[in-house]
Image (cartoon, rainbow, N blue to C red; front, top):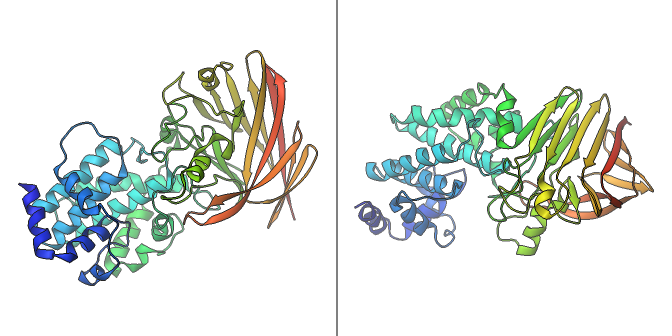
Length: 432
């Protein structure tokens, strides 16, 4: 029955149906009036995606923001075209996917900071649509949106939001910057009518996740001490699967000193990039973490005991059994300790046998190395890194939030040694 409703819309709109659907399935800014239908034709399959979403059964499906975005498209179309059945089906998809894909903290389940921002924008638009059309579902949509907005300040470090996980759309970060703390009226928010903009900004500014511990069981940890601020990501089940937006970034982190990003997530290439490039972006050795024999931890999602990520009085600790799934030792631990302008990264791996251990740090800074010392140059100063192994700095390519290539440097410390093993990196920020 519902398919016949959509078919009738297709008949009435003719060629405009495809443009409607194509624009409706993208990120904000969404359609605000009929003039927006004169844009470029959509990518193939968008209409079919909506039809499938509208008619799909209740069987098990992977958690994905694509289904919620399609639901938003249906909801918007239904309201704009006064088709209550279409709007109701879109609303059901929106609320159903929120129930299935939203963690208790308010963080979207797909392990990607940009995806969470993208989905927050989607539910923000749904809330504004309900408000604009005087719909009763404004309250249940708001109940979903509030915790999503509250998470965003925890994801944003002083120098910007880390790009952890995949990049679902290269326009998301810039378009939705107005939803971030300090974003003002940037991007889509600034294009809204004055009353809608004021309402959304009031909602944004009134939400903040005060109990950051709620994020930790879901694989995220925010830690601030002095001028240091960091965001850590550990998949709660260990290393993630190859598909989706998750990366093999177990134990990876982004750390800023003041507003200066020191060690960062390298980001991800835009969707449609060559698979070899995408695979490199997902790999363990392309993130700031530790590998054993060239491999990251956890052979597959769910293998081994769950990792233990904790905030402590002077830093952060991570312990896990993830190397055991690769036939390696059974316990590894890393601690980040902060004291004034200094930071120490201490590693320990238990076990036996001889292994190649590599520590990787990804930085946007210009790097000069001399034996076991590396100097990282920033605008406001420099970071002196003293290691227990020879430093090797390699230029590489990362990506901005918009999917553009950017130069980065990977600092590598490799040792071939018998286990058990301990390693120590001492870092001190010196102001220019």
